[in-house]
Amino acid sequence: MFTSPAMSKSKLRRHGFRQRGLNQAYELAKKHLAQLREVADVKTICMHGSPLSKYDNRDLWNHYDYRDFGIIAEPYFDLDFSKVLYLTDTGRRWDGEEVSIRDKAPVRE
Image (cartoon, rainbow, N blue to C red; front, top):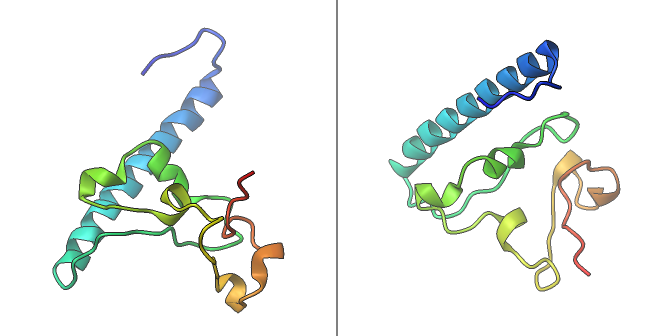
């Protein structure tokens, strides 16, 4: 791992914990996808998680490439939301875009 002289020990420790967490998430995604593929032909994925969590599950794909799994699309990365109607049930409601932290269609100018 590259270390900057300006990087404190605590920052290095946080980076190490974060990287281990990403590695574990990747391994779980790989394992769960293999299990799903035992019963279905999975071609697309989409994040899932607690809408109030401080973690954003899409962050995993900033470090790994889901296409390596034979996945053809992930909505937040691959859809042009100006061309599709996006509905979410986040917070157990269909009009939750005002209260959702992450699950909302990106605005493209």
